[in-house]
Image (cartoon, rainbow, N blue to C red):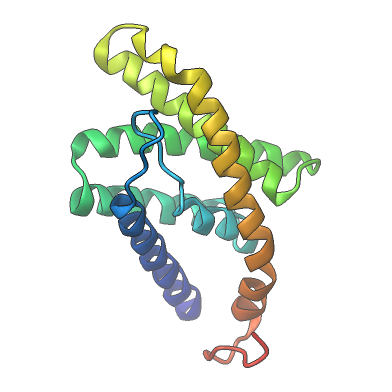
Length: 173
């Protein structure tokens, strides 16, 4: 149990580092609020390595901690709304057994933007944010694919690391 807690703490720290790196990247593609979703790499890997509860807990903690460190309450609200929609969709897609890691990540990226757009519509009490939705859906599909593609490449090494019960990095990595 202690080993699992240490690994989850390490992955939480890694996801926060990725959040910080993402906050430093100047993404100017004309779509307000668009990000690469780098911390979602950790979420996807956790979903496959440990399961839904652990992945959701790490994601929730990362959003709250990163929001207070690098953002504000508004950023936390939008991130949480996107994360919940994204996570539910990834769980449903994984449960079907018909989608690859990349396919599940694409679904997560698309539904993250749906959740954030829904939150924006509620906050501004108007449908104006829906104008951005087609662009955000396309961006979510592209970034979801990139995160999924990376997860496919990293997942075998992460699995070996997590299976090594001796508390040290496997030299074969």
